[in-house]
Image (tube, rainbow, N blue to C red; front, side, top):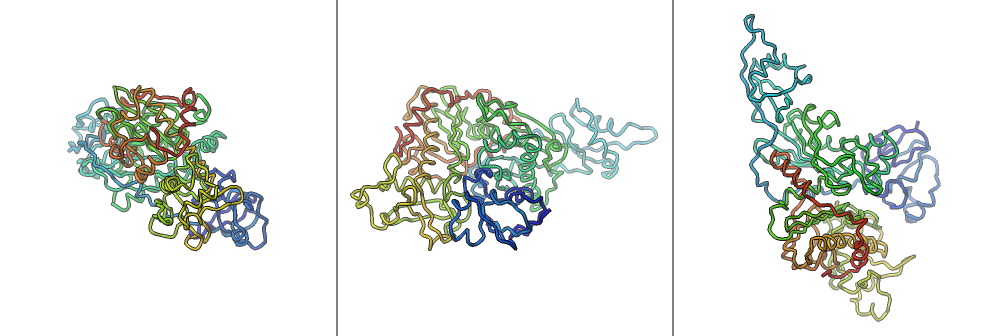
Length: 611
């Protein structure tokens, strides 16, 4: 066994010789970015190592790392196999999770959760009254049909006498979750959870008041196994150990948030009685530890579609162990409970006219509602919108370019005002929209090459367009101004990746429009859901043809609607029932077998407004 020390966290782990640094990081709980899941194709898992003896870089590393990086001990974590004790320095990415947790609207709902508390004053046993404790409790409760709960019964004698026979029973419907000494009816909490492919979010809710106490998020710890759901399905399909590992990672991340939020607000885990969970179909399967293997190949069959309830201790979620975990229903293999959460929060069944809702993230889900129909589809947009597969792409974190404008030169908005380290999805859309408008690229996405065309550009813009080893590229940030000291560029491949992603989104929209029997101009409103949708400039989204050409006033952002849907389901048993109704009403359009999809996809590749 050899010792690996991760810096700056100073986490130490002992591993067998021949283990990759990436696998060691996974086992140590250290976040190393790896959008390709360790295949060596993304070049994102850069770490700097310190060893006593020299080592040879792999050919993949030599292609992915600069000469200066190779000379100063940088390697790819997925490629470097550990053969001796070493220190590994990992760049700590400061994610800005408030972009995901910011509360955009107010929950217009009267709290009526399924979890209720009943303060009880019980008669004390005596020689004349030898009623068993369980029967004494049942006789005092106003709810009938409660089944015996061994876990609750085990501590009942102590609880009764600790509270001097004044206790509070906690029920979820007719399920007894706990009995607590004294009157605790003023404290009743739950968590709404959004299990995203990239980020997992927890909202700690006061079930009595119907309010958000606080919220928190972490990068989904499954990221090391790949940025997209297919990578994680592939890993899970290798066996039960791998499936268990993925499930443990995401639940562990959630437990970390729950523990921190509870500690900050003086709320014990045993006071959190219920969780309502949303996520895409793959994430929901992995959260429950259910094999997702057959979601990947056609016909994309999930194990379940209906809403699911399990006890917290079944999956290791650190709330009250007998507490209920409710996972909202899925619609199809690639339209999950997160989309149902969006439908619930947006009230698609109550909106007048025609509504288009687009939730753009690692996956792209689209909803078109109106004329007494709810149509849904999922596009294979890929993770480009999250910065994956983009040369200098990154998540929305400190140092990420989030906005781009071209005037006489390039003007940037960088998250946290720091030196730029890379570019996130909103910045990528901005950059492409701006260079397209300026004539740096043609509508087909190719950089211009003719001298006569280039002469029309402002001098400072023209100087940023240059020939690279394989194709042209555009310099967004010169090395002297970047955090790494190297130029941050937009490559021809980056533009192609965005073309494929946005082409899939607009093609999915047009297929649903055709299925509804309307024209794009008949759409009354476009709602952009998700944290990413919140930061897209409408002009840029329209400029590159990501959305149909509609007046900008018709486009509205609605924040993390999937998370809002989870909150509604947690706070209201009626809203939870409506989620089941919406999932059943939704008509899923499978794009992979749709005859018109390819034609719409090709049409949607050009960077131009789509009518």
